[in-house]
Length: 186
Length: 241
Image 1: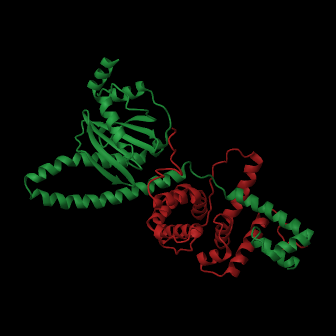
Image 2: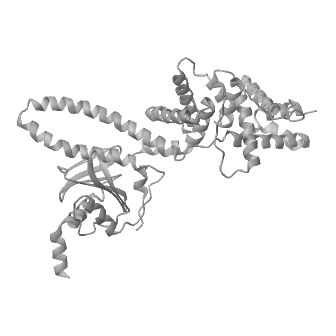
Image 3: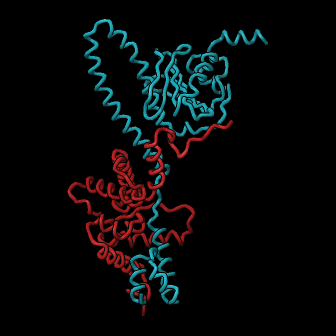
């Protein structure tokens, strides 16, 4: 008889809390790392940030009542960890990313890798007040209400920031014609 | 919803259209085209934001968590140990007996700590040959004349300064980690640590630590190893043949 493989992963059959945490980490860590990366602009720092975030999450697992809200909960912890890292700043602080160094992606054509690199630089150059809600929406998958709650803002203000973030990005990417026009109606 | 409202919506929430926006998109070809362009732009955003994630990030996070958890528990354990040691010193001869057990307890704890350093070992489903097994045991100056059963993984590991054989046996109820440490004095005992069931027992010239999610197979594995080490069993079987 073939032995049962260990799933979902590391020491998976330990206990329900560990299994739940294991599944949570495997489902969310990549996106959370990316969010952390765009928050601090540094790969090593993002790695540490994510590890500390999950350690705090593990210690507070009992506070997580609704697993559907896990992502927003983790983002909240990560933002607090990031603020703690920089102490002097509040939980809404957001680094300006001046120097992006990202390894080339395997499997992308030079054209595509070049295009992505241009978009990344445009995102990095966005003003923090536009970049953070955009990242929370695109990477974090948060709704306007959740983003507003994270940023201590209102859903309407978040809508405006998201709208302007995309507008500025399109303009920065050379879409000075149709793409950059506010409502694309002309 | 009119065109202006629709364009404002897709500029902020291109992937979360409500019913009104969806109805407008179906009724207005120009807005449908604008939405298609918006989704293409979202695709380029997705690709750009998807920076490479470190290899085995999830495993590293879990290892960090388990190690931190374990350190915290060991810290609490050490505090209790110091209190207990202080008490038992005053108890004269009882202290000597208690301290005699300490090395075997630490071997079990060190084995658990070692386990999280090689987490992928538990998922091994290979078939290690008896020659490979005996080669590892030879490095431990220990003879293992018989096979203790199918071994999926074996490695010579130094755990807490002790040379050991770190093995994994895939059994019907799950993976069982088996660590043999020659020269370690062990008092047989069972334990729970880091969510694992464990048992330590004396075999041959050392200690055998068994770790798994459950202890269903422990008895059978202990018997198998005792027989594997026991040369008299080998001789008896040979005689029978």
